[in-house]
Every structure is written in C-alpha cells, then in structure tokens.
Image 1 (cartoon, rainbow, N blue to C red):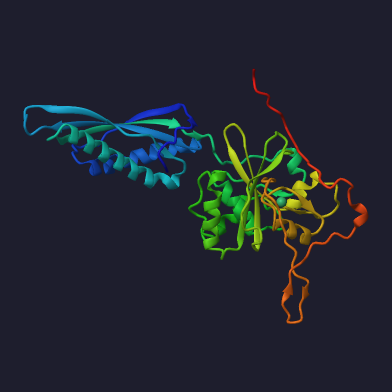
Image 2: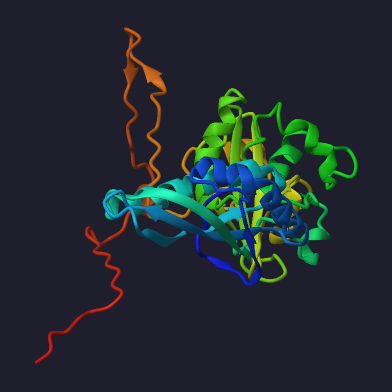
Amino acid sequence: MTQNGGSAFSKILQSFELFPRKHVNDINEFIIKIQTILRRRLLTLLEQQHGIKAYFVIDMEYDNPKEPERTFHAFLNTRNLVLRSPAELDHFIEQLKIEVLTRNERFIRDKSGLVIHSILKATANVQEYNPLEGSSYLPLPKFLANKHAIVNVNNTDNRCFVYAILAALHPQAQNGNRSYLYEQYFEPDHLANLHYRISPNDIPAIEEQLNIHHNNSIALNVFTFFDDNGKLRAPLYVSPHQNREKIIDLLYWKTARHTHYAWIRNFSSFMHDLTKQRGTTSWCRRCLGHFGRESTLQNHQQFCRGDNLLEPIVTMPQPKYHDRRGNPIPPQLEFKNIKYQMKCPFVFVADCEAFYKENE
Ligand SMILES: [Zn+2]
C-alpha cells in the first residue's frame, strides 16, 4: 500500500463512521478499538473493486491546562491511503495510525499546551482506486496472438510483470498462460515483493536486482508496439548485457487505463513478418537489424549502438606479418590498381542541406 499518486480516476463509493464505544484519549488505543469494523468494511468494498483509497476525518476533543473550563474541538484530516489487496490491510491500518499520530502532533504543536481529552469518532471516505497504469491482464492484439510467439499469462492481480518473468524462467510445455503454474516460484525466485505496477523506467534497476539471485545470467529487454494491431514494434529497453546466458524479452503495452507485460517466447517468430528470410533469424535487439547467422549477429553486436547511427565504426587491421626477430609489422595501406586512378588530382566533395543568405 502506498499514498495515492494522484494520477487516478476515482468516484466516491462510501462514507461511514467508526466509534470507539468507550471513552478513549490515546490514538493507538483508538485505532485498536475501531480496526475490526474498519477491516471488515474495507474488505467488503475491496471484493467489488480492484483497489480503493480512503481518507479519514478524526473528530477530536482537546483540553488546555491553561483554560481548564474549556474543551477544544478539532477535525484531523488524513491523506488518501491506498489499498489494493487484502494482503495490504495490516500495512493500511499501520499507515492510518501513523497519519493520525502525525496530524495530532502537528495540531498540538501549533496550539501549544493542548492534550487529547477524547477521540470521538473517525469518518472514512472511500473512493474507487483505478490507477492509470493498472498492470492487469490485457489480451494480445490478434496479429501478435496469431504468431504463437508470446506467453501472455492470464493474471487476475497487478503482478503481470512478475508472471512474465516467471514464464521465461520456468517455461511450460503446455498452457503456459495459466497463472497458477507459476505461483510456486514467487518465493524461491525472490519475486514475491515485486508485485506493483512496473514502469519501463524501473527495468534497469529490476534487471540488476534479478541478477543478484541469478548470478548475472539474465539480460532483460522490453519491447512495445505503437499501433492497435501490434505491427509497429520498437525496443523500450535493451540490456547492455546481450551476451548473458538467458535473454528475457518482454512485451509491454497499454490501453487508456491499463498496462501489461507478457513474455516473448520466440523473438524470431515475433518479428518474422518484417523479414523476407525463411527459418530462424538472429535479431539485434538494439537496432532490430536481422541476420541469417548467429555469428554475423555477434560480429554486428560488437559495433551496434542502437539508434545512434552517427557513431563511426572503426576496425583497425591486425598485423599479419612479423620481422626476423618476431616483432609484428604494422599493416600498411597500399594502392595497387593504378588503372583506377583519376585524372584530376584533387576532388572536393561537399554535402549541403541548405545555404543561408544574409537578409538585406
Ligand atoms: Zn544492431
């Protein structure tokens, strides 16, 4: 559970009041007294929603020792707290307690000398929480689904990223899109805590974290598409470690309200419509150049810097011959084909996009 990020659509679901029943002047005690009913109400609401957020108004009475005959009344407002699953409920209650303690401290600091006389009630204002980047299941566009190259795990929670990783780490011979097949691997693969929506910007850090438990054997790449049917494909993140043992290619895409990750099981099939070559093709993940042989790809990858086509590629020739003492003789450039010489000794070549003429 986290504080609300703000980029969410929401509508008011419910407001309800929680009373401590007995006189309470301690915040910890107040939370303990209201939490059973609060938990029940939140769980009921969570059954109908993917997520909820709530802010609380706490009705307080304070005493001022300097004015013993008066009682001060105040309403403390908490921030919005987000709850996305029953597993986050303990944390939600803890955050609520911290919020109320903080608001109370601020209030008595401003009005020095006040002490809590009584905590009367809490009003909960619950809204639907639908984050824009929801990370729930999305079906593949037909064009991509027909390739049978992508494992799109049918998750019902917001952990699609982890399911995509687990699908790659534990490939299934059949029914690889069923989420229950991967439940057993969350803990052993140290991915149990990685269940929130994950932005492509988080991928480098996650790749590093993943490799702590996998001996630097994983390279993570993320691709996306920009059209409705999945034809306009492009890389979003390409690992700098393409020579690692296990390359995991993920597909990331979004609709107006959700984002989703799936595992690209067969990259060659995923891209195949863009080449005229038959059979398996070796693809450079950086520039999406493709090669008939793996060795040609490896040669290319030494120089490929992705889309920076302006970077010069220079390969210096290695010495072929040695002198009598065994020292290498530096390679020499010779011009043998005299017949190709040009009559004109100097040639000036210029490439101009435009000429600017000074304005008179
Ligand atoms: Zn390349």
